Image (cartoon, rainbow, N blue to C red; front, top):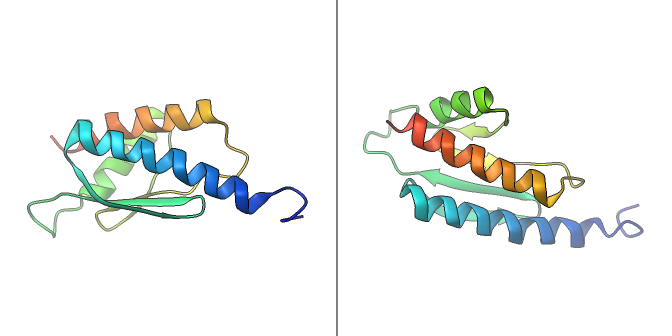
Length: 106
């Protein structure tokens, strides 16, 4: 199935789009660093002044209110979408993530 449905290629394609989207969010908010990915899993560290601050969880809560499920681990945000996600939904995820970061970081 992995070969027949070109899932590795699909994951790599999604990674390029998602890293580009995270880079745009990082530039717009100045709140992300150390962007990285492996396949269709991408992550970025939140820039925090106090490492004991649970900013990742706060942003996760804001994103839930806006309709997206982010995966926070400490002050690192992860996107782990299904391989069937379409580009329109990725754009919505980008928008929601940016709004959640802006709302959560204030």
